Length: 329
Ligand code: HEC
Ligand code: HEC
Ligand code: HEC
Ligand code: HEC
Ligand code: HEC
Ligand code: HEC
Ligand code: HEC
Image (cartoon, rainbow, N blue to C red):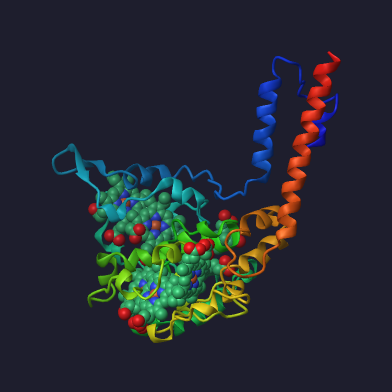
């Protein structure tokens, strides 16, 4: 920041562009302190254009060999992909045909392709030292104890929650609690608020979430501020995200578990805070973004005030400098 004050600076503060320079400074300062939340979009493999031409639109056209004409058809909504969403996922660099059969390059697709077995997370990530930090094997172990696997078996795969097209390791990469919570809860809601998807797995009638959680005051706020897994899994210290969804009788109902000084959220949802402060660039972000979310738990008020104080002092310094320059002219 001090660089802007020096005479050799690329920005000159003469009276004409002073206002815009000042605005620019404000913007730069704002960008410097605002937490990075958007995952970066990567460039997609050009080969994917062929697939995306059809798989991102509500309609598609193809050459009908029988009628020898171009035919326009509606695309099944389940088969429409979100290209931008794909570009922010962990597998954005992939070609579609890295995971799907190369036979998909022709349309109409061969009907037998439907039965093609697709790789699971463990097929690619299991036993790979490069991904050891995620502990895929341990997650798999925990997942197999969960109600989903116990009741539905192999048909409940990891991909039922983690869409391989869009997956992001949000709980590590995002610096905003709200962002982490909505990403995580959307996974659960994709079935628990969607009868069609739920009944593909279990044909019993799905109870409405709002009714089940009637005992919880400010339900909407809770669902925005805490993850479903906070109440529905047992925290495993060695895992960043516990995967053992417990039977409903064991779900957390005790308000004090969270609404207390030693909130269990410290060990689960806010665990990311520790990850964040270990990574260099996260330091400032974690301090700023944690402030308002911690309920009766640790809060670094002193650091918060310090950062505001530094900001104010910097602004005063810049103003004095500008005024001094105007007077000198
Ligand atoms: C001309 C349009 C078109 C192109 C190009 C196209 N698809 Fe499809 N795809 C479809 C349609 C329509 C369906 C729906 C099922 C069907 O009609 O076969 C589909 C279905 C699929 C399915 C789901 C199959 C199932 O039922 O489970 C996959 C996976 C798929 N496509 C992958 C690809 C890939 C990968 C590419 C590129 C290599 C590609 N598609 C190119 C139109 C297309
Ligand atoms: C990292 C692996 C991976 C990549 C890369 C990938 N897919 Fe998929 N795709 C899958 C898996 C796994 C499923 C099955 C999901 C399920 O039902 O459990 C799937 C399902 C689909 C479906 C069926 C609808 C659905 O969402 O279940 C379509 C259509 C599809 N993929 C198209 C594509 C296209 C087009 C691309 C390239 C832009 C692509 N896929 C890239 C793994 C991948
Ligand atoms: C076909 C093999 C394949 C499958 C299936 C697959 N992945 Fe990946 N995944 C990869 C590769 C390769 C990378 C590295 C991509 C890169 O470097 O851009 C990766 C990257 C990742 C990353 C980022 C790792 C990092 O630190 O950068 C995560 C997290 C991840 N995958 C999770 C999953 C999950 C969860 C599943 C199952 C839902 C899954 N993957 C399925 C091959 C796969
Ligand atoms: C019932 C839904 C569900 C199922 C099934 C599921 N997960 Fe997860 N998983 C989650 C949620 C929720 C998170 C936390 C949000 C996030 O960061 O992705 C998560 C996080 C992760 C992470 C990131 C952990 C980290 O340290 O950053 C990995 C890796 C992962 N899951 C792998 C798997 C694998 C492998 C399977 C299958 C054996 C699986 N998951 C099955 C819901 C699920
Ligand atoms: C504050 C803790 C808490 C949160 C947050 C929470 N739940 Fe629950 N949930 C419970 C408790 C406790 C029960 C058992 C209620 C009972 O038996 O009366 C339950 C029951 C359930 C059931 C069992 C329904 C049945 O009766 O078969 C499902 C499914 C469920 N929750 C899903 C979710 C999903 C999805 C989310 C996230 C959107 C979520 N829960 C968030 C505490 C919570
Ligand atoms: C692919 C759909 C799907 C997703 C995604 C999903 N669930 Fe479920 N869930 C089910 C089904 C189906 C059942 C009924 C049991 C069964 O057949 O597996 C169930 C049952 C439950 C139960 C009740 C267990 C009991 O004792 O009756 C809870 C609690 C629950 N899920 C929580 C979650 C949470 C938390 C998430 C997100 C991390 C989640 N579910 C994601 C489909 C899903
Ligand atoms: C899994 C942890 C968790 C559990 C269990 C939990 N809460 Fe909360 N509660 C939160 C969080 C996080 C917030 C949001 C705090 C914020 O950011 O304003 C919240 C907010 C609230 C609020 C709103 C406070 C406000 O500032 O408006 C009330 C009231 C509340 N909870 C009551 C309860 C009661 C009563 C129970 C037990 C039946 C309960 N909570 C259980 C985590 C929890």
